[in-house]
Image 1: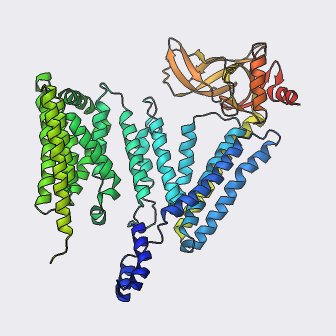
Image 2: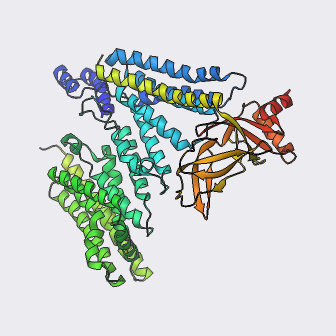
Image 3: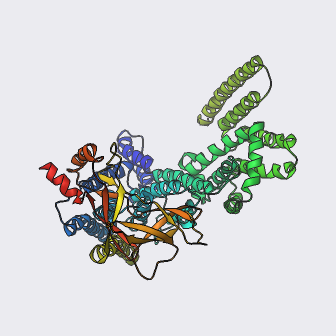
Length: 435
Length: 183
């Protein structure tokens, strides 16, 4: 949002000179769309982070040199000197408080995080320590996390989020204890919540941090779902779908709900998975596998944990009237609805889930279109796309001839294009000034 | 300046020093006071003896007897009891779930157990060498490793902790061999 505000503020002087705005109007716009100086611009973060990364990577490259000619104490001194220097720099930046530019905070925090990693790495080199790289990464990211809090550094937060995701993905060996497995991920993610402690909870995260956080959560939580012994390959797919629903329904305050969807990556990515899963569930073979997977998953504690969290999020979303996201997230629960009717009944009844998914997705698609014509905020193109994909999926899973399928696909494509033209005209009419 | 951020920063800075210093302390103690044992190692793969400027060190012995009734699980920390033979090389006599009251032992990670034996992983697997010596090492291995009587890892052990101090080949320190070769 800062980038839009900056653009607007840059245009105001020219608009005033051109007579498009009065001085009062320009002042009112400046006050209304003030730039949040605590949020650095993306360019600032990138340049500062690049500088820090180059310095930090240089430090780490120095490790590879292996100075046999120096004694052990001297080599250890080289390990600690950069750490000391970056800590002094960070202390100076902390002392200056808000007087320090945002990019200075970011660069300092990232430098200190990299110096910490370099120090640990040099010590392990000096003593020929073995061990696995995930263990090194784990301690490095934990020692860096507080820098995101005290220096309010998005760069360190992004590093931490990537590190916990990579660590979790690497720890899916089922023989590991829970504290050394991806089951620790939710606790690790809470460590960033967001950039606490002591800072105002109304702090808004930048779009880049949101995207990294969402992808990190997906990787971490899906790794945890893999951490169980499963009887059936499709078991983890249903757990991943429950995870997608949890992520999509993550509670938002009113300001968050009113933001455009593109600024809510958890809704975008969660919904994409859920819709894809829903379409896949319309296929009879796939729905059969999904129901078998549900039987296995219901024995797993992680599954019950996901369902409990999902229930809480559903209640919160209902209170906030987030009906669209609720409708899409409910796709994850279709197997549970079908489950009691097909248990112990063999394959004959497994088409129940396929039909449930078909009708559910069709209802979502039609509702999204109808709401637009009823004058409500909606996503009619998404509705049309959903219906098109559904029809194509049903045709693909049917026994119709190739000719029939081809004609159906052409008809759906034409209808989709016509609908798109209709929507564009409707939007242009809405944008015309009222005479 | 607010007190809470300063406190958290101070604690973080202390932790960032404490973690590596703790490693240094325990390993220096082991190097200074630990018993020197020698383990015969498998020669690193002559086609890939170096990975990232270190030698992959793999002691010959990778499994040992397990006491009757002991229930080992893969990944569990156990203790490898060491005995030095007449040839000066140490071998692991058996694995134990608890550290012994006396004798030399190393904490290792248990692998798969079968019959009355179990595999285990040593706590060291690499020996860093100077980047300038690394190409020399590569060349030396390609020329000599089949002729050498064997690579021996010199390890200091103290209270279950092991630190790889040196590698020797035919009784001579590997670093010295490479330095002489480089002259």
